[in-house]
Length: 78
Image (cartoon, rainbow, N blue to C red):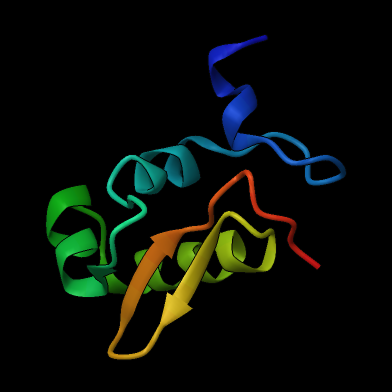
């Protein structure tokens, strides 16, 4: 077990530093994209594109109102 193993999913490879950085600002409670941009110090464009990749890889989910949250690892995802 490595510290980053919790942020890896089979078949997706390793997450880059920016993806790991954003994941530290997203919890299981919804957080706004504005808060993620502010807390991460990254540009809105960079955050938006990285969030899309994280969502497509199944790490986070997009909620209504521009909110994001981590997906519960214990839940079966289709």
